Image (cartoon, rainbow, N blue to C red):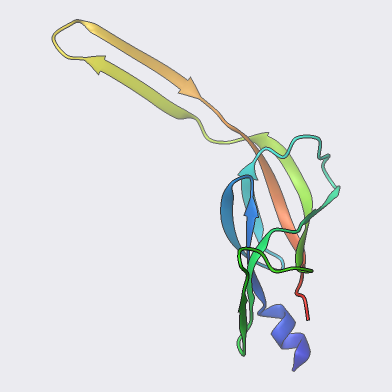
Length: 114
């Protein structure tokens, strides 16, 4: 029973100013984590909520002693975003493209404080 609860455990973790709901085995894409190589393990300590089927623990704002472990799968660039600006009646327009640097993470473990 404890094995099935571990598989259903989720966490809300803050990474790079954004919050992600993660479960073990999830793959998430975040803003670029500088200095992390592909295959390296990253530990995030700013866990805001941990829960499973039977209980949920909410931090104020973080849960002391909880962490989320992830493996860096890929350092790449996101999809192209197009920026088009037009000033009406001025025959003035601008078209630019932009691709953000992103990091792909695989969630390895969610460690909840007891």
